[in-house]
Amino acid sequence: MTEPRPYDQIEEEFGHILDESLDPRGPEQLYEIVGSLALLPDARVLDLGCGRGTHALALARRFGTAVLGVDPDRAALTEARDRLEAACRTEPELASRVRFTRGSAEAVPAEDGAVDVVWCRDVLCLVADLERAYSECARVLRPGGHAVVYQMFATDRLERREAAELYRALDCVATSMRPDRTEQAIAAAGLRIDDCVVLGSEWGEHVEERTNKAGRLLLHASRLLRAPERYAERFGPRNVEIGLGDCLWHVYRLLGKLSGRVYLLRKPG
Image (cartoon, rainbow, N blue to C red; front, side, top):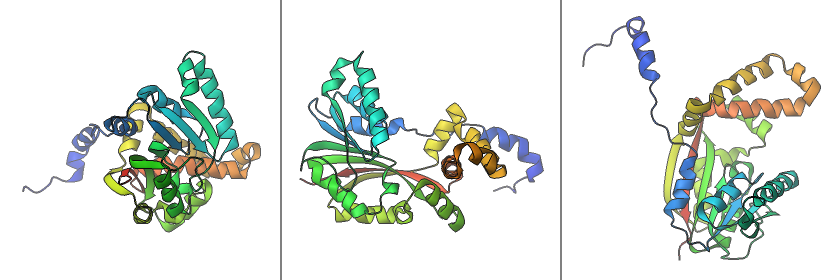
């Protein structure tokens, strides 16, 4: 191996090489995983932590399945129902396939064995009782059913103070940001891990290459850190804290301080 040239001699070439994409996977990956399950038209999907209903509607459209969206936030559910109503004006078939109701990961309003797939995207970092949440997923799944779970986790690069401030801002549960804790809860619920995809920064790279979202949020974070009072006067200190936390969430993912994972789980039977 030849001796590397000094950095000042390779800096420009190095920069051009780093400009080349590594073809990162993006959020579409989750739908591809659901598609690989070859669901029948009468399959039932639970969108756990459905928020404003974006993914529930997308699942119903893509796979023709019935989708139950569950969330504890009343305001988010109101918006989800409004979106469904608007969509039904041009896609009336959605009215009989998509429904939203209030509930939580620890108390899912569905009968035992009622669903074929649980979809849970970026929700369980907010849940302290992971054993209860995964037990509920196992309970409502039919034998042989699957759960597709996307979750962000902290890495060793995230410093203690950074973690404390981020978790406080976004109401994350520190223990639920650890993959070992998640996998213990999965095992305790009797679910099997068929696949675990460690994404690292890939989704962040994918979005950044197409939208420059993280760059914009980094600029927002800089302004919030430099002049928080400017924004707190109009929006309130708590919203400034949340806004900064949201900005840093995306920036930290690109810096390797946070790392995404996708779990494909199966209920034996």
